[in-house]
Length: 365
Image (cartoon, rainbow, N blue to C red; front, side, top):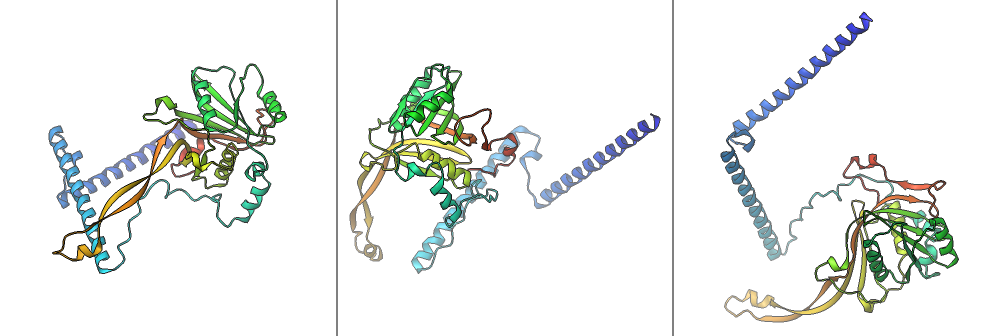
C-alpha cells in the first residue's frame, strides 16, 4: 500500500511539473507575440484597459478595414476596365472560402461517368415510377395523437403534391396502413408526426418494397404566415433537386422524385424545390412569371465619339419574377431503412449519430 501511494504521489508531482512547464511555455509565447506587436507599433484593443479608449480604438480599426476593402474593390474594378479597353483578359476573380467548397473528401460522391450508378438506377425500387410505368399516388396520414396545426400543414401538402389523398390515422398500426396502401395501389406514404401541437417529423415510405426515410421537420411556415404569398393552381409542378451529390443523397433525391409526376405542366408555372445545403433540405414552393422590361443602353459608337451626343437604344429584357406559395420548411435526414416501416426487424442503410457531427465540413447528402 505504501509503495502504491508513493508511486501515485510521484506521478501527480510529475503531472504538476509538466502542467507548469506548459503554462510557462504558453506565457512565453504570449509575451513574444506582444513584443512583436509593440515593435511594429500596433496597439490592439485587448491591450487597453480603459473601456472608452478600447472602444474608440476598436471603432478606428473597423473603419480602417472598411476603407482598405473599398480600395481593393476600386483597384480590382479599375484593373478589369483597363483590361477590357486593351482587349486583354481581365484578372481572375478570387473564389471565397466557404464550408461547401472546403468540404472533406468523400468517396461516395457521384460522378457523371459512373456506370455502376446508372446500372443501379435501372434496377432500384424507384425505376418503375421514374420511367413513367406507374403514376405516383400518395397516401398522407398523421400520428395517433394529432394537433390543430398538423391538419393545416397536411392540407397544404395536398395542394403541393398531385394525386395525394388524406386518410385519418385513427387507432391503426402503421404496418396495417402499409398493407391497405399496397392493396389500393398507392406508391408512397407520408406520415406527419406532431409533438406539442407542432409537426416535428416526416416519414416517407416507398411502396411496395421501400425504402423508409425518417426526417426531422423544423422551421415550418404555413401559407398564411408568408408575406405576399400566392395561391397555387392545380397544374402539375416542376421539381428542382439541388446538391444531392453523394450516393446517399442520390437515393434520397430519387425517393423525393417518386412523390411527383414525371410530366410537369409548364403552363402552370409552378416550381417545387428541394435544396440540400450542409445536409439540411430546404423546401420551397413558388410560382414564376416572365415579364418584359425596357432597359436603356448607350451604343458603343456613341461612347467613342466624345463630342457627339450619347444615343440611347431601348431593348427589351425578359425578367423572371417569383411568388412564394408555401408552405416553407426544413428537413434533416435521421435514418434510411431498407423495406417498409419496421422498428424491430428492419435493416438500416444509414442512421445519423451524434459522433458524425464532429466536423463542420463533413456532409453525407
